Length: 453
Image (tube, rainbow, N blue to C red; front, side):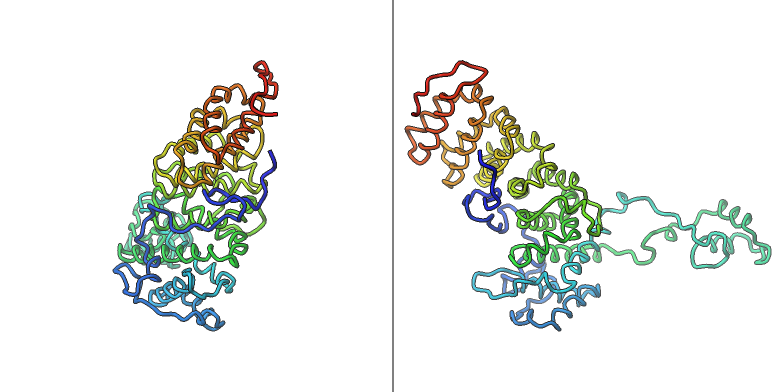
């Protein structure tokens, strides 16, 4: 088999020669995003961050307005943040007849400002009982009044103790006797957010993730975003915590990665670029595997598509190869799903995975039900002809390995039936049968080549 070329579609059920198409909102994803619907509705829904806005596309062409948006995001003020997020949502939303600025991510500081909005929510996202334990403040513990330490206990524990008589030993003794109050040790002190404040932070993070997702659809932004380690670390951390994180935020993060996948090199996580979250290549792949195993259709379909696109880049192979047995098993399971888009995503991913090396083709052929379900996709048939064509091409890749012939000879009659019944794939199955019967194998006696010249 030829080495996969970089122009081939990564994992969708669409064309094979054109570049990987961008994904829209997948079926089954949540629709409660505050900013996701603000660009499409003229009347502001109840979950909108603020009033509906009409922003002219020339607004983004002004450097002064660009700086104003970035400063509004960095300010953290509710009114400014709401205005900036709503404005960016409208400017980044793609409409068929819309003329918008295609290089929003090139605005100095804009991408980092949006990521900071998400990071602010991520810092408080987990419930307090799941957070790390409190850190005891020891700065100034030997001093009387510093603003830190134990001066409250030191001064209030013994009215008879005079300032001149306090020593290090007496301070430590008083500390041992009196337990400090609970609030004194809280990391965020007096600035805790109530439930309403947390909900606002979460809503802003979802809106920011939706804007970043919209950015990823713009060709001018792909290279910048795929090379921004902070951006990739943030979105991978969001999908890593999919079991506890907001569903809309996870969906936006996953779609962003899928759009950037053709340009994504996992080695960026071990590069010299500054790191914010310390995501490793293995941890990134494990996050994808978690999404692939999810019961949410939109998530496991997108994860399958993502894997199909990532493997196109040979530099990603070393990080994906250890997970191939799990990937094959899950993709074969998805082919048995009644959901047609899940079948298409699984076939599209296997189409690229089968071309990695000989070991991948051997493991896929030996995977239980793999050949049966590929044949089922063709026989059904799947309503998208390209998906059926890819399934046939996968079978042709498998039969090219002599070690697989013993397994595939059991399906000779099924191959012959498709050859004579479906003219669309007759050429492919003629080559399969020719390869299957005309070449000798170490495991069985060579049969006569009755299916070809």
